[in-house]
Length: 230
Image 1 (cartoon, one colour):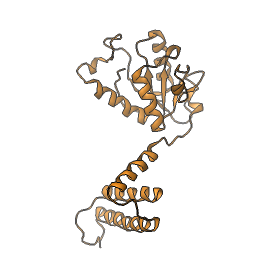
Image 2 (cartoon, one colour; image 1 turned 30 degrees about the vertical axis):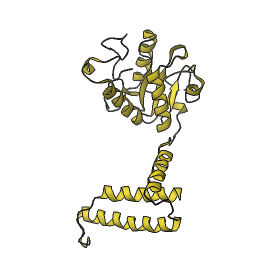
Image 3 (spheres, one colour; image 1 turned 90 degrees about the vertical axis):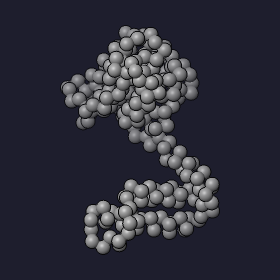
Image 4 (cartoon, helix red, strand yellow; image 1 turned 120 degrees about the vertical axis):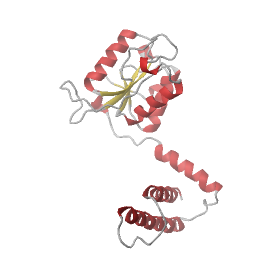
């Protein structure tokens, strides 16, 4: 698949069925099978939602293994796909175009990516593959897709906890008790406060060297994750 991402401002036409706020979508799936169906799907998505990617489906070579828009002719495949996945992360939902249940390799990757990121995957057709089918919510029409959307935190926090557990083990921090971690977390909270005072130019910032709020928040987050896994 190939896509082009333009994070445009949500449109506000009267055709949208997105409740009080326009929702955003990303179209994934087969771009080479059932061209009329793809065109109808894209037209319906753009009518009711803000489509982040692709911004069009007038591909230079619709039958190519990896299709491109005109502005993507000289771009590498991985750069185009990376931009598409970034749009997917920002979208309210992913619409999977899978004629007769067919899901190609790239689309299967995107379904898994969306599932891990907590982005709902919707379609009007269930994938043939039972594992992929379990990750897709089938709806009757695109216009009413927003009605089934529910918040989903995804797997991001669990992945961060696993990552930090590995780091803690390698650096000898795994044996720290919840009490030890809480004390360290409290100290880091003070560091965050000091960084905020310094950034705001408040008096009595302690005379410490240059520190950034971002770095201190990162330390605070790590200790919080460490405490949650302790």
